[in-house]
Image (cartoon, rainbow, N blue to C red):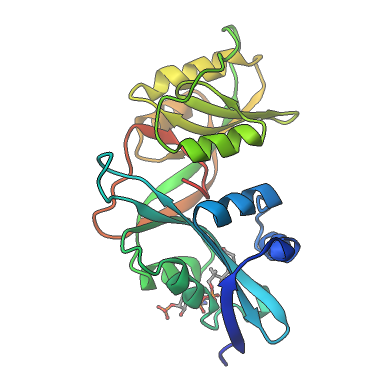
Length: 256
Ligand SMILES: CC(C)(COP(=O)(O)OP(=O)(O)OC[C@H]1O[C@@H](n2cnc3c(N)ncnc32)[C@H](O)[C@@H]1OP(=O)(O)O)[C@@H](O)C(=O)NCCC(=O)NCCS
C-alpha cells in the first residue's frame, strides 16, 4: 500500500478538537470531549498528523508516576491512537507513536482489538501482558451513600480532572454517576474488595455499575463471582519491566 502523504505531526490545538472527536468516533470511541483532550494536552502530549487534505490521525500520551515516590519512574501511557479509515495501514499510527513516546523509554497502553493496534504497539516496544476487563453488573444497595473525602493516593491531577467532570471522589475511589448508572473510574486500595463492596452498597439495588479491572486482579474474580459480566476487554501492553501497581484495581482505560 502507498504511504500516506504526511506533511507534518504537530501538537493539537483546541481548533482541532472537533476533527479529533470525529476521528475518534470513526474508531468507535466516544470519549474524546474537549475537557478530556485538554487534560491530555496539558499533562502529556496530544498530537495530530496532518495530511495534504487536513488532520487525519491523532494520538495522546500522559506520563504516569510508578514506583517509589521521588524516583524517575514515570511511564508514558498512550491514551489514544486513531487514524481515519482511508489512511490506516500506511504507517501513520507508527509515526504518531514515535513522536508521542520520544524520550519516554518506559511505555504502556490499553490496546483495542483492531488488527493493527497490537502490531503498532509491539513496533513501539510494548508487548501484550494481560487483559483489561470491562465489567458490568448491578449495585446491591443497603449501605450508606459514598462519603466524599480527600483522595489519599497519587495522580492528584487525574483525580482533579475526574472531579471537574462531575465525579464523586472518596478516599480510595472515584465514581461517575449519571442516569445510566455508575462508572467506577478508579479504585486505589490494598483492600479493593472492601471498597467495591461499599460502592455496590451505596447505590440502589439494580443500578448498573461498570468498571475496568485488570483480569489478574483478585477484584476481577470477586466481581465475576457476584454476577458482573465481561462486556469487552482491551489488551494491556507494556515495555519491559513496567509493572502495574496491584493497589490500583479499577482504572480509566485511556488514562490508566
Ligand atoms: C490502530 C491504528 C491506530 C494503527 O495505525 P495505522 O496507521 O493503521 O498502522 P500502521 O500503518 O502504522 O501499522 C502498524 C503496524 O500494524 C500492522 N498493520 C497495519 N494494518 C494491519 C492490519 N489490517 N492487520 C494486521 N496488521 C496491520 C503494520 O504492518 C504495522 O506493523 P509492523 O510495523 O510490524 O509492520 C489504526 O489502524 C486505527 O486507527 N485503528 C482503529 C482505531 C483503534 O482501534 N485504535 C487503537 C486504539 S488502542
